[in-house]
View 1 (cartoon, rainbow, N blue to C red):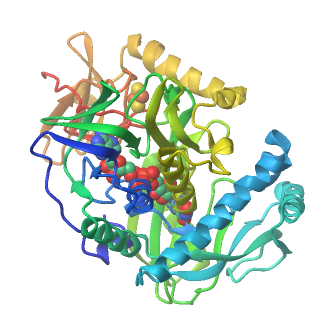
View 2 (cartoon, protein in one colour):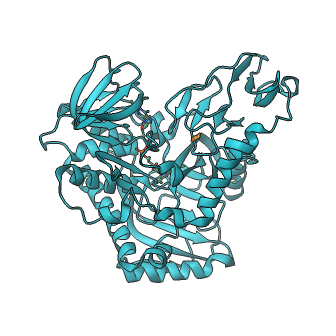
View 3 (tube, rainbow, N blue to C red):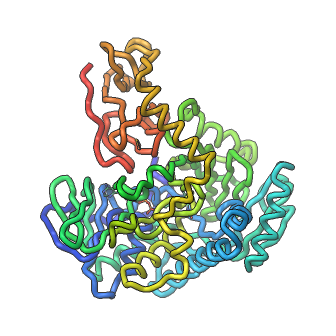
Amino acid sequence: MNSYWVDTTKRPEFPKLDKDIDTDICIIGAGITGIMTAYMLLNKGFKITLIDKGEICSGVTENTTAKITSQHGLIYNYLEVTFGTEFAKLYLESNEKAIRTIEDIVKKENIDCDFMRTDNYIYTCTEEYLQRIKDEVETVNRLGLNAELIENTKLPFDIKLGIKFPNQAKFHPLKYLYKIVEILKENDVQIYTNSKVVKVEEKGDGYKVETEENEIDAKYVVMATHYPIKNFPGLHFLKMYQDRSYVITIEPRSKITEGMYISAETPVASFRPINEEFLIIGGSDHKTGENGVDIEVAYKSLETYAKEIYPSMKVKYRWATQDCVSLDKVPYIGNFSNIMPNIYIATGYKKWGMTTSHVAAEIIRDKILGKENKYEEIYKATRMQALKNYKEFGNMLRQSAYSLGINKIKPSKYKLEDLEKDSGGVIEYEGKKVGVYKDKDGKIYAVEPYCKHLGCELTWNNLEKTWDCPCHGSRYDYKGKLITEPSVKDLDKADI
Ligand SMILES: Cc1cc2nc3c(=O)[nH]c(=O)nc-3n(C[C@H](O)[C@H](O)[C@H](O)COP(=O)(O)OP(=O)(O)OC[C@H]3O[C@@H](n4cnc5c(N)ncnc54)[C@H](O)[C@@H]3O)c2cc1C
Ligand code: FES
């Protein structure tokens, strides 16, 4: 199902790239990061090309919940303890600045996108998080934001304690971005959609960006592809995973228009009113492709939860999406690698990309212009310290070892006849493993169940009828067509 944002806007259309071209800056990916980077680089004397494998904003951006806030979960005490006060302060300041940047752009460009200042809250209903909430509010106030400890919210249930970040914001992300895209077009940015980039490699003193049929020669490349589609020498696949969440939009009947909320505890519950009519509730998070997660109950459990709180509610929209999470919880923004100049990435937003994309767009703009940016150091994309999160790094290594090795050589327990209609899974067929989806009429779709990114064995997602990769989160439809990066290729078909 489409998100509310998609259903209430008309997507701008652009042609497919059908010839080889030269450009100064090639931005790959037309989500919020790519679009805002192009916008920040307007009128600086560059020829800019923006290219996407799908439509404009058809990645994570069209499925966000669009809270514009510097309150990225309980992050500040962690940042201060791990990286120091100055680091935490710069993180807070950069995201607060991004809120103002969005507001200024809305005003300057006269964008009708329901932008509204509102408070953001993190709350807990359990004893376990009380001390962490208290520590967080102390840290945030020390860092310079006037946060408030609260014991009540406008939500229709009791909380134990919470933190209010005042004067945050929300908007309709697609109304905002489609207007920016119109401005890009008026300023001669070349925009191409349905043009998948399959390779980026050095050429002369610049880069060759290859799509399936054509080439773009560029001096600078911005990989705004959500997860970098190039593995080496950046090695971001060692430092990041993807986490999937589910969202329902309900008509709650009782009105909440004020505030935006998220729980401190997991599973996360997130509340975000759209207007007087609709309320977004998000949650049911899990690592993409994680073995053993019962994905089929994701919406059901959200709906049951919503019904407990709003008994007469009606579900209007359902959607799911995923975001990249870096091992040290700080996004990767800036140079892709120290040995490849002029190629930039922005990723690892851990579900807080509305502000972070704007921080990223400014850092990348300044890098291209050769200007210093006060925030670039804390987000440095080449850092390897993230690997010091031994617990998460260990989890990632275990997952890769399992999906690349152990699981691959272990025969599957299932045979073709074990699969019911409208279900799928990895089966054993003539001595090898095959990924099979049997549709409602019993028609069979068979693929080689190995990810085209780095070869991990895929898991079947019966809720969305997709093949999901537990290693770095690539996803494919039941016919094997690529849906989400980092992979750039479709799955091989299997004979069955
Ligand atoms: C459930 C959920 C709720 C969220 N809610 C919030 C929120 O309330 N507030 C907040 O701040 N953040 C939120 N986020 C995070 C935020 O939505 C994302 O961080 C942000 O949208 C990412 O934008 P992006 O431009 O980096 O990626 P995307 O929007 O995914 O854009 C990347 C683009 O690159 C393209 N691409 C990929 N590979 C290729 C290729 N090979 N060739 C060409 N193009 C390619 C894709 O098609 C896509 O259009 C949420 C995330 C999730 C998962
Ligand atoms: S996404 Fe990396 S191996 Fe699948």
